[in-house]
Length: 523
Figure 1 (cartoon, rainbow, N blue to C red):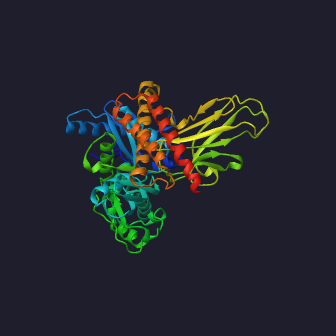
Figure 2 (figure 1 turned 90 degrees about the vertical axis):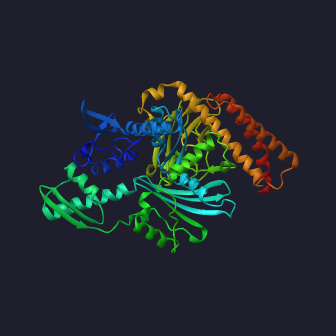
Figure 3 (figure 1 turned 30 degrees about the vertical axis):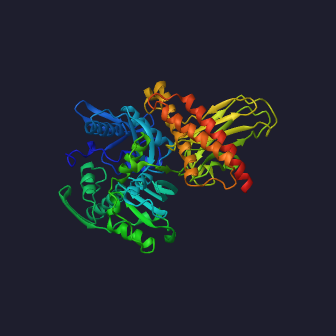
């Protein structure tokens, strides 16, 4: 049926989720797919022919259908309802794409307890295959699948998985290799036969299905047989930057596309002949997600003892300031969850409103980065320019989802970031206050849990400042134990946000007052 109904064969929707129809990448990819992509309220929708007539589905709705199938399979296997999920995403997914993924899961009754990067999840799976009591493992993880590339440099020590740096491309995978091949052979067919098959969905699908180094498609178009050949593409080099091979103990390959011999050879050559490890199953990120799900749900398996994953922010985040420069509030590669603040002010006398444009990216000029959203703080009292003190706070949760607030320190007036790209996915989700409150409770619990685990690891790994007094260490131990007992007693299903926030405040205030003092002393 695939060959005879290419317009109704939907695949690789992940590249459209959370995107606007006029997004450059959406427009550039449309020509490669046999199904119809239409503009509906500014979002890409896939139009298919059904018995009831023509129907349109958003990428989020298609993703929800896939999640529904997985949810049913899980419930059949477990014999119990599935309510929570850990989902893996490419490291370079934007904030809007992450939120769209969460919304797609929520639509089918799944609460996302964590979004995990593909390469990080694969690293977690790798800890199950090595002796974690050995020396520090410095691992380069290359995850290349159907639709995206994730590259991560990861340190594994005992059961602690600490991501150091990440790179990647959300639109580089086997589907993209196929797209380039299809485009190449469409041009080749024109050169040989002077016939354009770019508007023939069935011909495009048959060509895609046969995209191998040697092409042989009988009766491709108008009864014409087509034969040609091409070597495997090597443009993946642009994202596989050479790294000092002496720093690495292992190179891990994950994903179906890493089975391409040319890619294996290329990677080995880039890193001085070092042979990559290929024993991980292509589903390794799923295994890592399952391990994280067990850990976050309180599983007491011995393998999860002292287990900790420290993921990072893939892109720098900041505000556009004078001259179009992006002033960084959070630098890339800091471990999450993370919170940072900067003070901004007015640039004109009696200015009553400040407009904040939030960007993510590595470039100096804001326009060269990804615009995450725009919001404004109004009703600033009339004063000379430079006098108002506006504190802008960026807070990233464990899912790498960003919350931005701006507070006028003189009046206490506060405004939270509203990103237009987040609106219009599923209206009932946005209006469902109970779901939002539950999600806030889950986030509050997770943040408290991770902060507690991080502090506990400082003690267990003997990483506390040497100048710390015994009484200070005892105070730190006491507040950590208090937080641990609080977490073990509270009900995960009915979280009280205020209680978690209060416990977090106590934990952070006590630990910061002790540790910052010694950081200052040691510097």
